[in-house]
Length: 295
Ligand SMILES: *[C@@H]1O[C@H](CO)[C@@H](O)[C@H](O)[C@H]1NC(C)=O
Ligand SMILES: *[C@@H]1O[C@H](CO)[C@@H](O)[C@H](O)[C@H]1NC(C)=O
Ligand SMILES: *[C@@H]1O[C@H](CO)[C@@H](O)[C@H](O)[C@H]1NC(C)=O
Ligand SMILES: *[C@@H]1O[C@H](CO)[C@@H](O)[C@H](O)[C@H]1NC(C)=O
Ligand SMILES: *[C@@H]1O[C@H](CO)[C@@H](O)[C@H](O)[C@H]1NC(C)=O
Image (cartoon, rainbow, N blue to C red; front, side, top):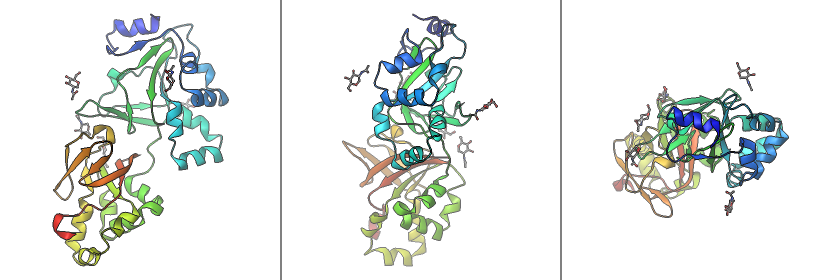
């Protein structure tokens, strides 16, 4: 056992699931499936701080380490930004590293951690014990190495920069109809006033209710209600969703989550999950959720 881990054990911080490893952060990553991460870390000059550790417990780092698979899932807009501006890679990586000590047992609901580039990671811990960092699930099994703690993540972490409304406004290629509807009904501002989960119908979802649209838009209350049926107070990233779970919307009705190999919300299939914003989560769905009588 390394002394760093021993110190943790002594103060009773380490969960029973933690693995303990003699290597340092960089060595551990080099031996695992973190090829892209290691290449980038070396390229931007982060290798040195992650491979110290002769003197234990000085300058330890907690790293959320995206696997190669995580890099393969990098959202296209993020990939393009990183390619267009290679200097942004450093900040992107620094956002995965927390100076000091941050282990699983310190991840309580609502806790925050400042990363090496001075941005904040927000932790949510759900009733089902799933824990997410900016929406990305973190497993229970951290690895305590000689100079820090490693947590494997299967998606990259991104800073929370836009609110739900701002995100929709900026991605109006996908959400033009929804965004227009929200603005029209005055929900755009209301969505800034709390933490929400939005089930956002992509544009072609609206075509499925086109026959009913004249009736819906003619009845302002109905239209408002339909929009409100897509908004759930509270932040539910996919890690929090379980089969059969009911979510109460702003309209007061309940949405039922069903999970088999795919995820459905009241019959609408979820195709993109876990867009993390400053005030909640966005999941893209393929159809518009409507009250039974309006379709
Ligand atoms: C790397 O990934 C492969 C394929 O998924 C797996 O078999 C192997 O055990 C992994 N190696 C490590 C060190 O985790
Ligand atoms: C983060 O803040 C610290 C302390 O204020 C400062 O020394 C450091 O340069 C900042 N780092 C970045 C990347 O902004
Ligand atoms: C976590 O914190 C949020 C925001 O404060 C709260 O709404 C939620 O109920 C909390 N979850 C649990 C499981 O305590
Ligand atoms: C969550 O963790 C607590 C403490 O370890 C445990 O008592 C509880 O049963 C767990 N809940 C679920 C849903 O796994
Ligand atoms: C969202 O939740 C966080 C944490 O509970 C809270 O600090 C923040 O004020 C909430 N945001 C809004 C817009 O209500």
